[in-house]
Length: 109
Image 1 (cartoon, rainbow, N blue to C red):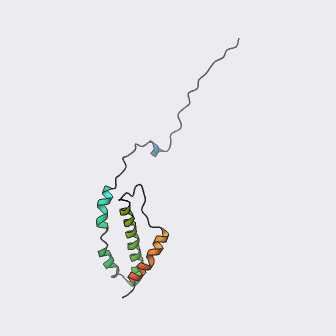
Image 2: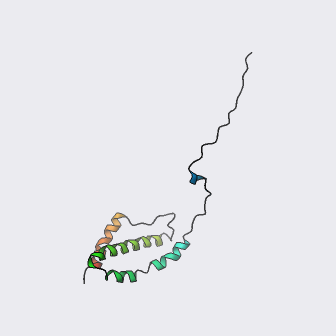
Image 3: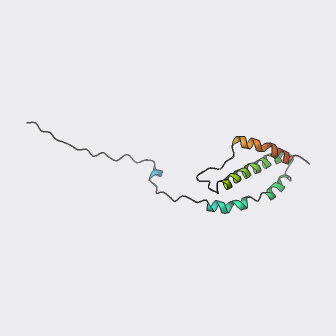
């Protein structure tokens, strides 16, 4: 006597992924808070005046940093303050291109 038994196998659920995959999705931040924050950050005039009060050897690195961060703020503004979808940064070549101007601005008069 031949007995055929059809057995249906229910697949087991996949193993759980990393813990962060099970967290609830938070709403996407908006650019509005960043847009309100940037105008005060744009107040570089005071910082520019302070660069010349530093010792000569400290002026170039501080001035170059000031120019590079200003470049990043320009890009954030160009992205309509949306730094969540498109990252604003200064490339190595852009940084190198800013150095001669920073050097000229920090030379003794």
